[in-house]
Structure formats: structure tokens, C-alpha cells
Amino acid sequence: MFQAIENGIRTFRAKFAEDPGAAWLQWGRDASDVRQGLSYLEHAAKLDNEEAHFELGLYFEGGGYGESLKGQAMDYYRRAAVLGHAEATFRMGEMLCAGIGITVDPEAGRTAYRRAAEMGWKTAAEWLAGAFEKGEGMEPDVEMAAFWHRRAEKLESREPSHSALLQLASESSRRDQKPARLG
Image (cartoon, rainbow, N blue to C red; front, side):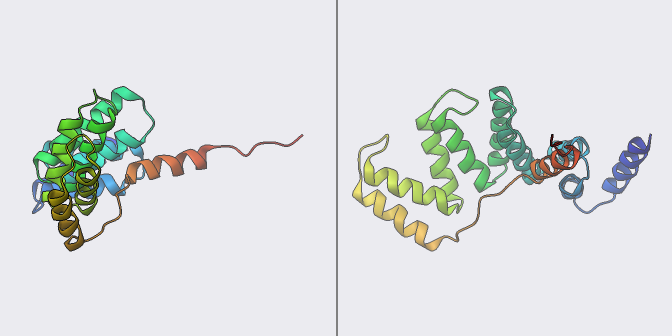
């Protein structure tokens, strides 16, 4: 019952928030329960919050839930990419190239890498430079390799993101485990 009341209050508050999607995103990231966090992130995703789509993608990709949910991660990454999220676009490229949760599609993966690099994701630009240099899945092209190397040098390095909900799930799991008995 408390959960229903809390959800009602948050729904009311979100209606008056400057950016309701951002409010649901923050509540999802700050949740004390994984199911509650997922629910809040889904609210934000329904409002086309690109970070919520990305966060849900991180959760389903990294949670060890099997290939079917990795496909769900791809769906969230794809939506975040359409909304302009560079890291989601890069992760989508990784999944396409490796066939994680979906059929391998290196050409689509390279396209996603290029798009992420064009959006300013340094790791994608570095990947493209190396791929053109070595001819990974394409003819080697020294000029294109040099272009992407120069582009990568101008971009800011950022650490890859991690799912707040996966961290919460991990912490909850550790708290819930009983210490092993000796003897």
C-alpha cells in the first residue's frame, strides 16, 4: 500500500516538474529497491528521456539475465541512440559487432560506431581509426584512419557508464546473503 501511495505522489509531482522525464530518471537512479527503480525508469523512458533508455539498456545488458534480455538492452540502446545518446549508440555498435543478444551485423555495428564518433564519443572515433588502419571489416584506408585519429584527439575521454540499478541489486544481494557457517 505504501508503494502505491508513493507512486501516486511521484506521479502528481512529475506532472508539475519542469522536466517530468528527468524527475522519473532521478527517482529511478536513487531508488532503494531495484523493482521500484525499474518502474521509475520505465516512466521516464515512456516520456522519451534518452538517459532513462540508456540506463535501462545498461541494466539489461549487464545484469546476467541471458540473451533474451540482452536483446531488450539493444532495444533501449537503439531508442536512446535515436534520441541522440552517443554512448548508447556506441554500445549498440558493440552489441551488433559481437552479436550480443541479437544476430551479428558488423556493417550495422560499424555504422553505429561512426554515428557515435560523429556524436563526440571518443572511444568510437578511436575504434574507427583502428578499424581503418587494420582493415577490420573494410579495406584499409590510411587517410580515413588519420582522419579518425585526429578527430579522437580532439574529443574528451569519458569513463564508460555503469548501471545504478545493477549496483543497487549487487548491494542488496550482498546484504541479503547470510554469512557461511564454519564447522
